[in-house]
Length: 528
Image (cartoon, rainbow, N blue to C red):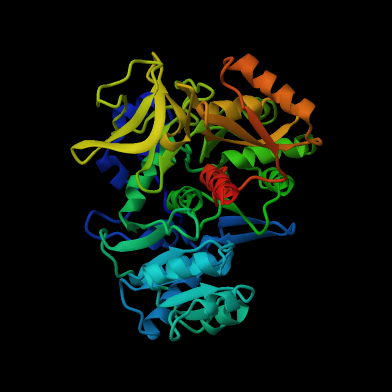
């Protein structure tokens, strides 16, 4: 019999979350306790009951579907754990994975965590510089990859370290004689995952280090950010190499015994919509870009959707995409705000019938979290006043490096990263607000806005636009007028550049820093 999850999962209302959510109630969802806990046991082993029930559904970009059961992952992970023991891998050693979602990925991920080794997921599209930096930083004993990436993986090894293992069918077959059960070796505070945030190859982002007990605190985001409950048919198209895809798309649903779904290979929005229809998905959490790409495909009418709950993260969704979601998916898209470093702290409580989802807001705090918007002097901003979003942690206020405002009802609104504020001739403007306005224009598919230097105004707004027609001077003027009429006479892009594509980070968000760096390089070249 599969593990039955009860307690906080029995409640769906906002009022119940405020009344019942607590740290003690979270622990009741798990077999482990504050001393002994293992992510692999909680997410896989305890749900493997011999029934063949699906754990993961994978929509491959080439059109194939793959369904993997709890039983299959559990037995394979145990065999991989025994293999690591036989290879002399000790608790605390790092095992890196550069694999698309697949049976080898889940077997290796959970098998390593059972032994007390630390799993390090790596993005499959990393080039040699990005991979070398991360491997050099975490120093894994073993790097697991596929045949296609094996040469790249070996190219970053130094003196044979890390050892590169190709996790193909032959490798899995070589494990088949090993035991299919394993007793975990971890304590709750032992490290389980090193997660790298997105960054450039020249600037290595520090690994965020998660213990096994991180799974427990994650459940606040699962319950109230994505609204996962037993019985959901869940899907998250984000790569499990990143925080959203691993923690919210993989570990959280599996911990509740919920079948999850994901995407492997080159992303295609039409392929995603087909999977959502074929799998009967009722709850999806995706990046804002995923929703925008589905809208831009123009193919929604070809499919039937079955949603009860939707959530998104990464960046705000522009109003025109929200309107499209309402039209085709019939349920509100709920923002979920947080970072890899601080976790999810603002949510919109998907599925709560007593919580009003206001379009364009970040929602309200997760139970137990305290956030405020502060002025430069540390005082609290009035409703409607833009300031810095601050989080109370460890007895003091810490910055999120985001700008925000609140309304009279206590909802939070994102107003861009602190470094995405553009000050022109004394006017303060939000890159996000200008982007969202431009995205409402029928000819704008994607848009990225930054401030560029200007002798007279200090900075002026420059917009990089992916259009569905040929760019022209007439379209530039039209976009400028369109933006100025909807925002303010001073708030429009004085410079518009039409591009074929925008740089994005691995989470799919427009990489404004890269746009700024490109402009700075062009300016330096012109000066030279």
